[in-house]
Image (cartoon, rainbow, N blue to C red; front, side):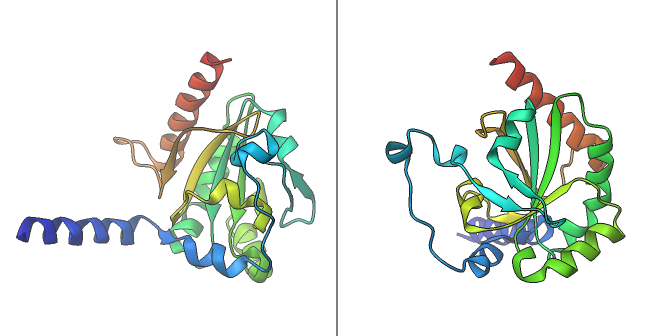
Amino acid sequence: MKKIVLFAAALAAIMMFTGCSAENAAQDSVTEEAPASTEADTGESAASAAFTAQTINGEVFTRERFSEYDLTAVNVWQTTCKYCVEEIPDLENVYNNLPEGVNLVGICLDADYNEETAKKMLEENGATYENIIYNEELRPYIDKIEFTPTTFFVDRNGEWVGEEVVGSPQEGDKNVSEAYLAKINSVLETVKGNS
């Protein structure tokens, strides 16, 4: 029994130090219920459902943008998560060093009511990669996410591929940017191998 309690306490501590809860931000962002759709209704999986969202810079971003790349890394973050904000410069470095055919975008879970703060954080950290303002149409993509930052990967069809990265990636003696790029290259090889 003592081992179980110690394990639970250790697991809770790890989760506290690797990220912030994404659940509250996504729930706080919900302003109206979107009609439920299932694979049977649409003929496509929930994660490849069509969506339209606005970027923090006021542009329109749709699922069709994923088709322009072999792989898109999607970083889910929120302004109230210090770990999310701390990794923005690393993500910018990743963005500037992406392999051909790969894109990086962010989804800010609380930008719908914290847009100016999100813009300021991105500007102060030199982010030039696109950041999407969360809306309910994006829920199928982020439903599995419990903590921020989390980075997941989608193929050109908008389907999740590979395993998501929860928190900042750690891989041996690599820094955060190098670890992200190693993960991206690994997932990209899998995607290209399945084509």
